[in-house]
Length: 205
Image (cartoon, rainbow, N blue to C red; front, side, top):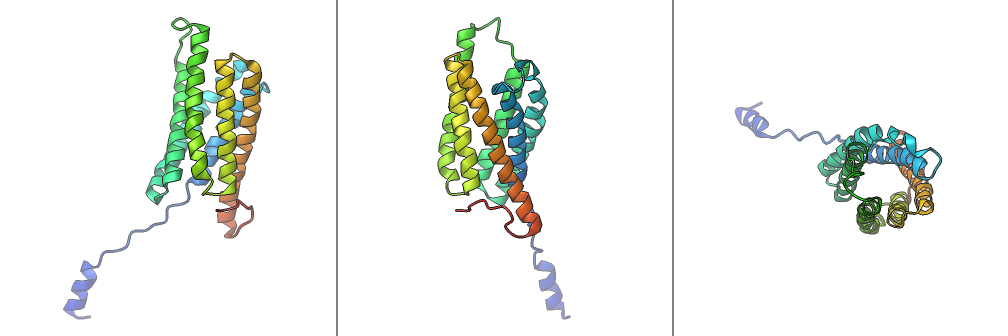
């Protein structure tokens, strides 16, 4: 090898390794599991006294795990995935803080507290609604998750604003359907990657 060749070899940059795994199955799994447990409480399948069981999940899996998936989506250049997972990861952290570490019982009336939580859920429903529009260009599986989640947020918001256990339980049942849809999308992502072929359809757009 000539001196010129060795010089060119030294100056040629080594291409970076781009072996970043798809973070979407992680984000979807974290969202699904946390939503499932909370929806069991909202639907009435579990008594509200066991709601603190959700707090650890909300912080560690639904919050930190999902937020991490969003950061990896940023690294992969996926604007939709990054926005969705970071946002819902932050939602679960805020849920953990508001429900487990904030006591407004002596500060706000029961009606004002219900209205505050209702507006909180309504705002998340609005965000999820416009994300549903973008989800229509991702896959049928992801679109189903966002359509169901939008419905869940609006039903839970109505339940809080109207102080109606019926609407909250309805939202809980739709939340269970949302969790199952998210689990399916996660399951499909992991399985299709592992088998190197489409085992479970996601109806890509």
